[in-house]
Image (cartoon, rainbow, N blue to C red):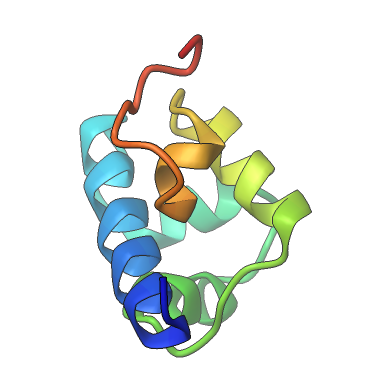
Length: 80
């Protein structure tokens, strides 16, 4: 997967799973993972790629598989 494709997949899936987890705003999601809203928005908008520990934190917060967020699997189930 090319870097641009990774960025698009990651940003789309972060937003998708945030909404599925019931976080209506980016501010709510940012608070859940202990970061400021503008920094979180960079991940969701694709301006920055989160480091692996942050992808793990986002997966935990959104009750989803971090590998799904990263585009390594199409299974969002945290157990799968």
